Length: 153
Image (tube, helix red, strand yellow):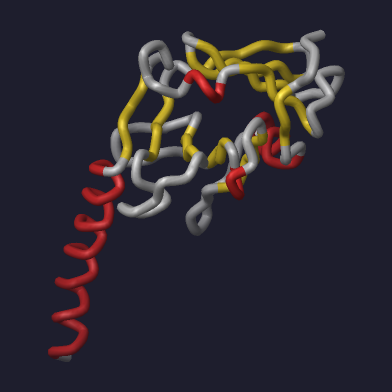
């Protein structure tokens, strides 16, 4: 009985600690202007073929998406500053493009320059138990990996 009592008290404290850690390591951006992420700017498409969708455009305004004849734009993103650890000095950048609220970074993680390859992008699921992506988010993940387009359509 005592073990259960201590576990029920420790688990919520651990969850609060993890949540606080996640918030401390990310910054919410409403645009990318002056964000020092200009090296990511461009249009990304599956395999770098800009005739294919979904397409992801990265510029001062943030991230915009074209899929199934529709365009949409992220109103804010979470830029995970220390996702690679405190000593990470590479070129990969981790962005959660669809945050739900201050305590939920959303269901998709985009990794720009994954494995230190400039001009590439992967979209990965970020799902907890019982969570689901929207149809659009699932399409972004399914089409991964992406590369910067050589030419714009």
